[in-house]
Amino acid sequence: MGEGHEFSPEGLEANFPVGLDLDSDGGQTATTIGEKEYVIGGSDDGAVSIGVRILDKSTGKWEIPMVLGMEPAPCRGHSAVLLNNDKILVLKSDSAPDDCIWFLEVDTPFVKTKKKILESEVVAWSKGVKGDGSKPVVISGPSGVGKGTLINRLMDEYPSSFGFSVSHTTRAPRQKEKDGVHYHFTERSIMEKDIKDGKFLEFANVHGNLYGTSIEAVEVVTDSGKRCILDIDVQGARSVKASSLEVISIFICPPSFEELEKRLRGRGTETEEQIQKRLRNALAELEQGKSSGLFDHILVNDNFETCYANLKKILDRDGSINAVCPPSESIKLPVGHSVSVMDQKVLIRCGKDEHGKASNSLFVLDTSSLKGGAPWRTRGLKCVRH
Ligand code: ADP
Ligand code: 5GP
Image (cartoon, rainbow, N blue to C red; front, side, top):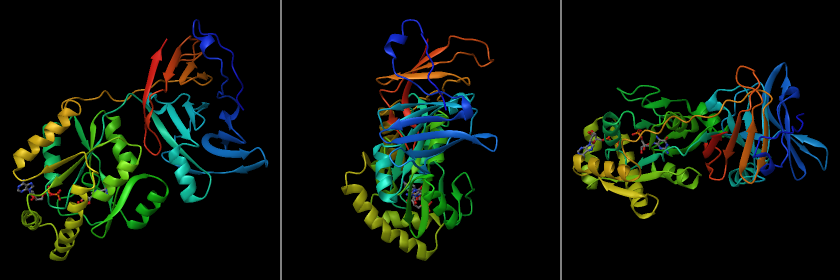
């Protein structure tokens, strides 16, 4: 188990009086909240894991919680420090700069909700990312309204600004659709298991098939510095809105139901039975999309060029359409670093540089403006090197 380290970074130490955990014996840390001790890591069979066990100190019993969200890959060690009494900041040693900061949520609103639903002990991982990233854009609307055409045009015109969230679906691929590009075409049983394992941000039964957005699909785009575009149905948009992810949501309407039917038939990708089903569902989607206040913007796709220009105006208003965020970067920490926390600032003292030489490297991680969280990334971290 890790032990406390004394350190005195000139001018800063007085501000950081709180103790710490750090990686050492067996790469294990223990963080106590009330009667519970959260033990992270440990080396079974030689490899250092990042598994989680909970000791109930009142009964002396151990529990293995259900772990949601993306789990960090094993590492050579880590430090852990409690933030806000509901999450543990885990700093991985010797890991790639973009894989160094993680949060284990143990009592956040997200975890509390899951505990209630799953009626068991739950913890959830979320990767920490410096900076805010750009808000993903949710585009919804009935089948055949022109969502795909608008999105393709946007990505063709601004390939370095926008990236598409590739959904999973159980429906069969259309003739020109490629696996991994248009969708991840998946078997229902596999997708259902992944949903159960917490890998999906949202999912819905749409026109008789299962569709869903994986956490990875959104984060791969956002981590690359691009703005993520999600083409999802109204149910999916509602789930996203209820989550901790901040998005801009846009609903696309047809000029008339007759025109929608014409476009859907004109596309020639569905059987008559499927067209009928999609048109029936369109009525409900249009009603919900227009009336629920669910969407930030509603656009009518009558003349394509006008609709596309209006879409660009919305996106430009919310941050320049050409803006590319720098890919999220993070710090690289050696084995044996130490951490301390006060208020919402975390002081990290490296002790060594990445080549093992003694170093006074010191980082202050400001966690006062965290955004998002499990099962997404935790954004809004600010890091200053001293
Ligand atoms: P969705 O992705 O919403 O299901 P698509 O982008 O596949 O819809 O568009 C359905 C069909 O409608 C396509 O054949 C497309 O070329 C056509 N379309 C899209 N926008 C317009 C528009 N404004 N006017 C006429 N046809 C359109
Ligand atoms: P299609 O079969 O025409 O590609 O898509 C049918 C519907 O499924 C569209 O309304 C589309 O927005 C929606 N859809 C596509 N991917 C997802 C997803 O990941 N989640 C949800 N909820 N809906 C999706």
